[in-house]
Length: 398
Image: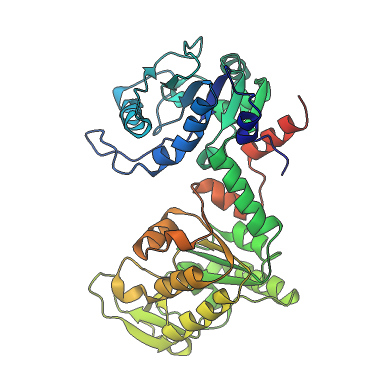
């Protein structure tokens, strides 16, 4: 993917004395009192800001937070808690600037945080007039927000059309590199793990991956639908019987390429969905009418782990069982440990996947952990993300 990289501009001295506008993803969770409860996204934004400051730029940073109503700012919409945390992380005061669209005062070597960009009228619909005004604020526009790369909004797309220079920040560039390594130029075999409660939410992902991967491992409720498609009984497990034809089509598409959708040979079942439910391992052919499948069994987990350890590239989206309950966590633990031990390049994304990675402490063993939820899923669907599209266009023209 041909894009300009902010790191290259800084290395060449092109950011010295320039006004740099960074679109970051600072949309962090807060409690009822407005206190930040998890700051990963803020910490992830720091390298780009420090890069700009070290290059002698006048730095403006903005982000959305929550779902504000355009043109109707409320105190709960404010990035003030983010400004306070960013100040701590950077070791300097980061002033918060409101009503910034018509002008911002910032000097080289300084950084300011521009108030919640989604409060501006026209942001979500990418209003050209707003985009042009924002573009006039800067000499260099930097997109470092992969989490919003699937949205064509004013600060993620429009401003990049009109800014003098538009480039990718280090976080976005790293996502692009990891995606290309995993999907565009993968080392084979390429294994993908796609799990979740419903086939319908990830059907296009499954269809897209079926054209490219060597092993398509399905888990959770999705696996139950594939078990049905393979002619097995699943008791009262969560599934989507109306999508059996689509599941069969994915299996057929994989088989036609000599690839595989591994169907579980054993499962872990319970009579109820509860933290204290009694777990029983059964062969996949012996599921009773009142059973609920809540995890893959140890035989299946061992087989999948062996496949993953032999893979060249692994893409992971979703735990394969109800790993929040320890008696149904064996499958996801086995998958996580196999990925950690594999020599393959691995890329993982999605909230539940990140929770599993944290639970099993394999952060350092995963090749790349994606910061985007919806954006990561759209990449797996084979879509071109708007933020990538406009940065590629701008790289090919002045």
